[in-house]
Image 1 (spheres, rainbow, N blue to C red):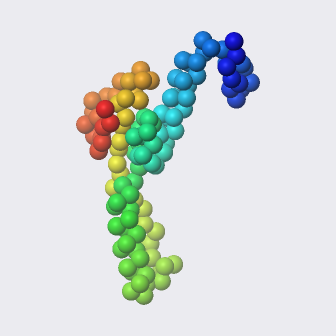
Image 2 (tube, one colour):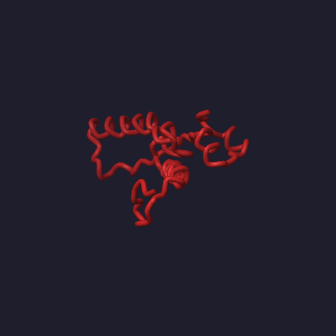
Image 3 (tube, rainbow, N blue to C red):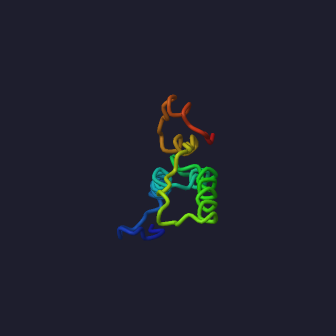
Length: 113
């Protein structure tokens, strides 16, 4: 019994529903692995290692203040993030059958359980 048609063209049988859900979870988890949005990890992504947005905004404020004081933007150095946040979703790791090493959990800024 077909219940839908996945992108690769094969009919999805009712028995494949669990596999399809697992595949969607894997895609979502690994989208979070390279994302800079920690919010995606809170929504089911696996891991995020991204610039701390609050720190980035503070850097932007300093940059803007320099420009307002008369500095020419073209003469200012390019600013890069200096502080990063590591967020890990243990619920997603468990759903994927992954074990997150303790050293990584200790290094994380936030662990979602």
